[in-house]
Image (cartoon, rainbow, N blue to C red; front, top):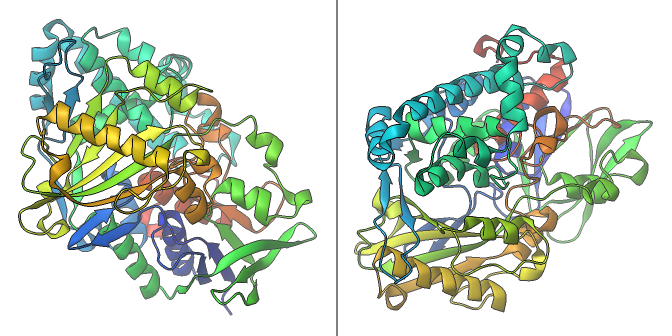
Length: 522
């Protein structure tokens, strides 16, 4: 008889974990409180428009390749990927007299990127080559030592690679990313291009450790890809693999508690859409839900490893106002991905990560136009826009809605961002061409995903909340209870969620190795 396992939550991490456990011989049931799978990787369909309401950047392809191989398939079989060129475009803030600044497109291919750097800061080309080389070394070390490590074996951190790289590693860990960049480059926009990835990690580049400059290798060397159909296609692929592996799904099944007896997990209590209460009696419980919710709401108090007092000392990643727009006509200046970066972006970070600081105007904004690549996401003659405005993780900012009917602060931020996009990108009539509008705010992430403080990512990736210092994938107090997802090791983003599933499998197997599992061990 198969060992029974329950996975709480059908987001990316929950789906990925369910697949690996099922393929390892477990009888797996997934309980999801919402009426769909995918979690934060949501889908909004309105009047012929298809909006991804969550992740939209496809980075770290090697992680996807490895995961799909573990799942008995391949990326090529599951996804239709397109390389983007340009990978993205950066729109600087207009000059003091209001004139538009010339945008900078980040091309595909290292040689083309070097040409761009030579134009921006000719004297820094050698420094740029060195920067990418250290980014490669940092990435290799991360994959071999940190990302796939359960940290159950302390000796895994003192191997040959760590000893060889120790002087640079200490520099990377103790130097803030922004300072690390500024030591080699002077062009203000180039500095921002090399440091903005910290926001993807839910942190301020002034506080993120410099080891995260490895992310520059991802977008500047490996390039940026897009799965046709958006990240909904990734969700569909994982869901299909889970069903194929025999995973049972129960939607609108809200877990209300994790049962513990004598230090062992014994199952979960859950409630269906009709309000009827159930108990799932299983040997293994994996919570892919928000860790704060799991620890403070689902576990009995005596078995909480991360009680509320711990969270009071934890730094949250950002919240966000998300704006989905269906636009009539073309927006030719916008490629698939764009960044609107303010000159004084420190003010932005103070508002997102500080206390009591109002969101400035203008703000730095991320914009995705998937209709540049995918004809299926918008009707003919229209564009699909997704805008992400980072804000403080605070549900008091409110929630969104359709057609401007969200909470006042959410809609105010959306209006400002739309006006800014129109001005900075040369589309003065943008607002008048909007035919579909929908917003989401921090309160929606609390209501839909039990997100701590309404954040979109989880705890920020400053040094004290990264790697072995981040919450682990096995409960320290409850045997048979495991954690997956962005709020635990190795961290935020879809690739990290896939790795967290593998880390759960390692814990279940008792595997103490540091690197990724061999595909032969799948």
